[in-house]
Image (cartoon, rainbow, N blue to C red; front, side):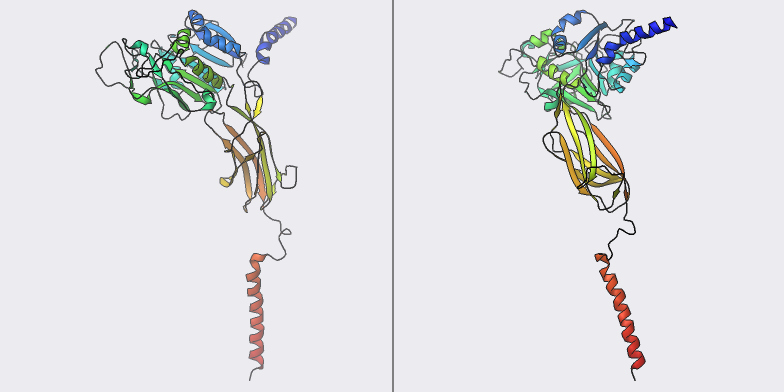
Length: 437
């Protein structure tokens, strides 16, 4: 018994740092990140990106992808909040990790970054497919662009792409404009049309195509033009976030520090847009930006403060909710003018836009419809780049009791008049009939 107690205490002592610093609704930013590498040399060749993450408070755990001791969870608890796969050529993960384990990791609400390259293995392609994107099936194919290439590669095969076709979203890429083109060298991918959750963040130009740069084209390329995505993101229905790219090199120190001049452009930038682009994008992926929470959902009758057990038809009520956005360090009031509430039973009987006080409080008032049954207050808020909010609160609505109606209903006055006029007419007819000669 004593030995079992010692083992139990030792287990708790080992897991305590992980449990105390883990992702939680109150501090949604990821903190513990597992980084799987093909080679530890990547740790130094991509050190600027890793150091930027560490400077923002992230705890990076570097492992070789084929390490037999790696694991994502222990005793049913996940050891990490996010996973970075910088191991494009890995044919098989070590330990208990496989494609299914990574999908389950995301399904549990954790975040993922996948960086492939021209040597992408079937395993990495499988994980990407599960996330909603398909890399070019040709293992030798790369993105080629004879128009939007980096000018320094004029004499080359034009596989070093300088792209500035970015998604227009301040919440995903930050409010500061990225002036310099982003350097990309690798493989492209297409989005699964059946997956509406995938977004193109960095797209290829209309002149780009995917092919083997070392051989002549014998058949039309499978990926062409702006349909090619260079960098994509996914926000799952459980608000887990995924970044997928076919270029591991775009995270490298060389690309971060390299100057760039887009072919045909007179402007030469001393530094590419890679560092700003990937830094801002990582803030979104790791929930430092665009993460919403809703608290203090309330409803009550006008003039009251207590939430009733049910409403009566035609009651005037007030609905309110507080919405905040995580800034990376604290919760700040979220300000928007497109948050709506539905009063719902099979279909929405009432749809109202909530007004806000600029301090996070959203509210509105309306009259309960003249229909009784079991209703729901529903807020389904989905906005590009933000975590989705799905709020639902059930409330029954009853009709008037027999003693709650007005004594004389104005709408029934014509019927009252018809009844009394019929009585008066019958009396006059009877009188005339009986006493007339």
